[in-house]
Length: 433
Image (cartoon, rainbow, N blue to C red; front, side):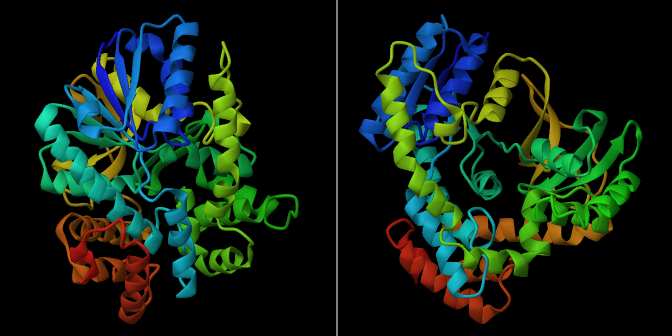
């Protein structure tokens, strides 16, 4: 088993209790390890620390769990950093969703202008984390869940020699959703997805060893006029049939953008608004359980459930225990593993992860019908990373207008200035000029 010192940046977040429950569920793989919870909120940190200590003890694990608001102290001598933080919390995510709507553009957490502003906030904090690691843990590895994970990883990859892998369950969860809509058993399917984070497509898709697409064609004819099938499930199945490739769910914003924006504007609350209404109950539940002798998290009252960030934990376990596992990872496209993308572009691929790192599976090029939009998003990713790391307003506008959500240069300029002003407490002065 791996005995490591792990710093969890975001250890006082609303997802932290579920993440620690997941780590403790994998606890035998890390028995004897030390976990340092790092966050800005001392009260929430103490709740998560207490919960975690009790859950670990009740599981019979030898885990040392501490908490601190001092980031550099928390990072001292760590082997690994689990990064999952949200600068500006859900209040700024709410602005990321609302402000673009005023300009006729979709507002979304990781996509388009909303995701771009989140990348500016996240990378500014990440630069401070990297500086602290250089001072107190120069060999530490970063396992990143901070969104947008692809842009964060691109910025770190472009500007440092730091080992960083970013994770997202997308390639694991996108195919089963479409298969279930089609009335097919996900266990009988083999779907290999690749691309950039939240924007991948299938390059291999079989069912019982045969081409999946004819089965999706038949399913579409069955469900397209069935009112009992949710409209967005039908739309995503239709997209798979039309493009002859299983899409990431986030492509709904690109291929059904008008429909989504109209629906987004018609709702009382955006997604962030819904979450903000639930956050007080999350913390009430965590506080209740922290008082219990034998805490048990209710998945319905825990942000993200009780197996949060499990993919990151799987990747860390495979790496530190040298226990090969097949997992999706965001990493540089070294050697051109994914055809059609530059070698220094961070891409998302299925890999074998072991003590030597992550080795991509053999990859086929994305189908031509979907390659162009994915390459466009990869180029936007690179521009966004430049703007966030060292850029000015001009770099930011250049990145924003490269994104498919943004129709014109004028909209990009007006929208950026509106959002930059709202984010003025979270981004550097160079991005306001």
